[in-house]
Length: 516
Image 1: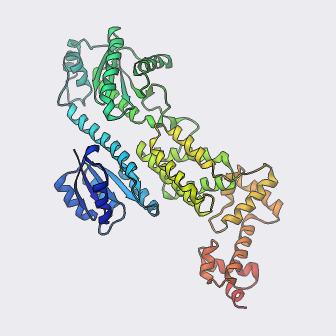
Image 2: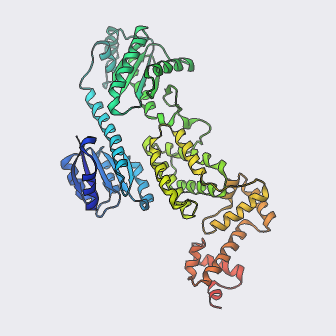
Image 3: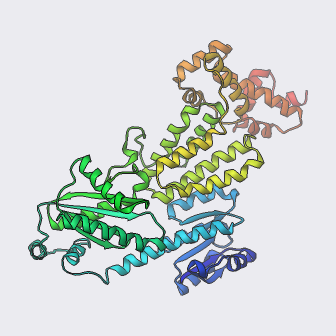
């Protein structure tokens, strides 16, 4: 059984999780519970659990601080975060700590059970990987296994070549291929056995290399380089024929000419398997070649801060609100490039897209673009983000989902676009509106759009925006709001700046207007 510690400051929730989840049938046992992170640390030291379930907001030490403390201390146990919708901004920070799951309160029993099954698979895989090296095969396969473990420091190359020669593995070229079936842990052993038997008969009988089972993978060591797309496709088709309906990921680590370099190629192949989410599907993957390196994805630096991501969320929302549907997919690809270049793994990228999409949904809901009755389907979609095997499929689904809420732009043309701009300003005058933002949404250069706007309205963009804000300010002042409240409400962070703008356009101060 896998030990679990539940950390939450609500006794009823702790008790509910203990009693409502079928822990034993899922392969878990609740070792202990705690009401805050500080108490949990002591318990974790005593119980040594493999899974922590923690609320993100707690007194004394919250869930995020707890996970940060555990990671800093070198603990690698899995963590599941519980959070309310209101904690969205706070929960984004959990991404960098590699949490295994993110569930929204109140906890749905079915979603928790599904998450626990995924986490159990990850824990068991890691257990088996550690135990695997304590056992296994002999002769040729044993020597291949030796090539797949890190070489000893200052190892004698001559001794290695002698061992390889005795095993009849001294070839001019070596190509490592790693195959990972996309199945549940319950099905994995049977699937690996089927792949092993079929590939062994095909590859070893024609003296093309060696096939071994090294949980959770099937590994091929080929004696002929897979140079060219045709050879890689032929091998992929052979694997697919044996796998039948079972989906799988297969990757090559590249060709090497020395036995001592096989381990590095193996590491590269495993890395390519782990990065399959970022690659093209239905082909033999190659180390270092991923979807995000293609020209359709922007080449961005990895140092994007939260302000950059917030700006991306705003641009996506503005694109939907302005009806510029063509901008949505490029912005989603820009987000994917940012997340990937922050060295996030598949799980973290999915979480990032969960947060990004959720942020846009919140803005759409706040502007009454999403009806309350639609929120149930929205929640289902958000939770389904974690189920996609490939990034491109995920982007397509998010793109399709968001377009359902895009404003209908109607017919094109400059007159219509200026009307869109005016309508947009009327809806978003209180935000940090910039001509450059609208230029991006309408695919114009900033100077050209500014000139076009002035020709059609007789006003510079900033002047027009100021006048809209001042008109709204007059309405709010007439309702009895205080000057500083009005300034903040209409988008002026600085009261003195609001004062000067109001006096410029109205010839008197806001106070004088309010109390003539």
